[in-house]
Length: 345
Image (cartoon, rainbow, N blue to C red):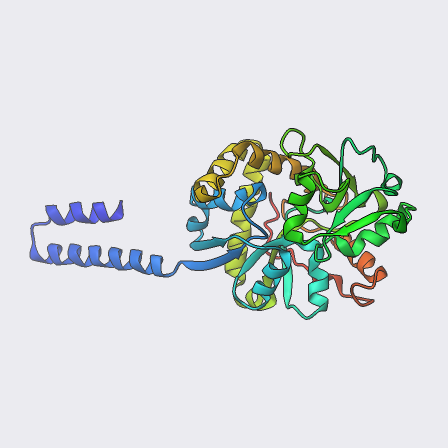
């Protein structure tokens, strides 16, 4: 609009001075526009896995131009698990990653300089997905049954604590170790009576190929955070404005989805961005809806989306110290920050 105004003014100018002035004006506008384009901040994002419903908020924000409004050029790549995503952020290959935050304190214990900058789910859906026809109603019913698990999964270090709290004799369960990349497909194809996993995505009635119900760790006071975003401590120190802009847009996207008005639009944006994945929109929407009950926690009730409750992280640290996954007296506030989360949403 400014360029058009300047051009119009030039065409109506009658003196050489005014013509020269208008030419300079247009040149300045073009230079300013070019500088603005050059000033865009590139943000590289690593996802936790191949595309699924919980990735929709990223693509909604991209499709709506909300990242661009903040001067961000966001590059989004698929992932192959929480562990690799954390390592890539720690190594400076990516600026931000979506991960299962329950793995974060352990990674920090091993020396990864990474930190949570946004909490999507204040409580995790870790537990067991069990076949609805298996007759398993409580953890005790697992005795005599076959259960799949993956040694490298985030929930695995808490299995023994869960079974002990539920007074289950682990020796009476046929525990089958399956690679994390094959566990879901193995269970869904009919192997085993249940599997240890994040349960929300795999217990959706009418969507998953095997009707299953969840048995949750939270029922036995094993409270861990769910999905969230991380960044390196170096990025937090050197690019705080960029991270703040990203988190603000990400919060906006999630709020739009949770309001109910943008869930279909977010799924459409996901499918448009990832046509080669051949995603089913009904399943993507169901996955988003299944994740919503885990966004809130008692300690975080009424707080802004993406805000982490200190009490929740303190409980997580306490459990991990008790299971000797991290050292005693771990500093809770070193694991996460709320500094980038807008407080008004």
